[in-house]
Length: 238
Image (tube, rainbow, N blue to C red):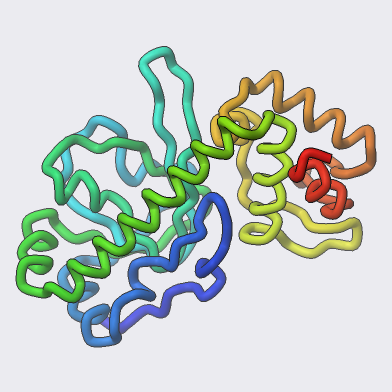
């Protein structure tokens, strides 16, 4: 199987996907060897790649397209944990630990990937310590990002958290349009709420306030950030 380059845009991105993707951490021979263990697959939009609480049977290496990672609590509250895209790996935590899936991964658009059976993946890690080390490095980076998000959710209000999230999405999933930057992630208000630890009603109210102030525009084609400078000011508590 030919080597697939990781997306350079994924590096240094932001709160949701600021880790250097897994495949980009590997040297070319390591990346080729890992990809050759699996088989290519394609997923359509809204297709579930892995489901929370299911047993671990395989890991997925993302080659193209974006997914959302969500966790549903016992009371039905759904939190958006991350966005994963080209070069990322999903399902590796449960594969290594042997426990059930901790989250659901759903395609936001057409996704191309390579799936590797769990036993083959673990055997490869045992035989390739450099690949294992890079996986450990990725885990540490994701843990730091999660810790930072928890600290921010405790220190900032919902308005500040939502403003920072919108800025991150504009940088990582934004398309320039005449009015400003249109978000292309396709996340719903419910999913935005799950990411900032607020209710959907609270996020709807905050978006309405931002719209009335001319900071964002909403419509059938999604949300457009018109005045990012004002979002930065709000994010700093202004």
